[in-house]
Length: 180
Image (cartoon, rainbow, N blue to C red; front, side, top):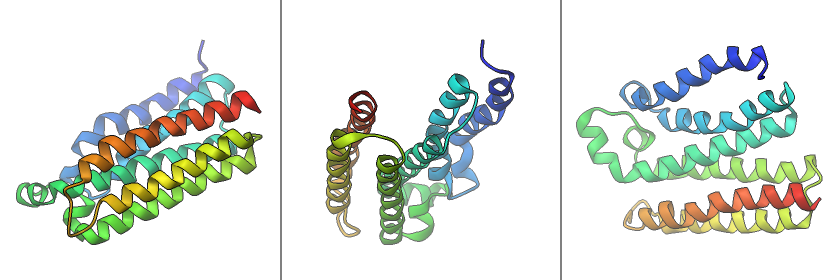
């Protein structure tokens, strides 16, 4: 049986998950809402399994939140004209592509820094560190592929590089936990 706390916390989580798809109608922070909706997963799992949230779990949640929000901003850059035409709010439509790419970069630096912090917070080992370095290199590649003057490689950055980053985050944590 899950704790009563899980039941109580399920309502705000469901509100965020269900409300996300409408956020572009009233806030440019829709990318962050998407990130939060994914970033809540480690927190929920921690409450369900241990009945509490550790600092490491909160840091992992921050890493996922900023990772998801950052790549969603990258992907939204290609929709800037549609968003503006339809009155939808997004960071690219509000700030423009160059500033949106800068915000995405900042979010990915926070994500990488959070994943790096886990290395020092938990006994993660060298396999985790090796994966972390690869994740950092992939973040750099992702941001080098997408330029304000050339958005033609967004799909490569989003579907290819980003997919590898997602898998590498899982592999890093799995190796860090199981090999330490």
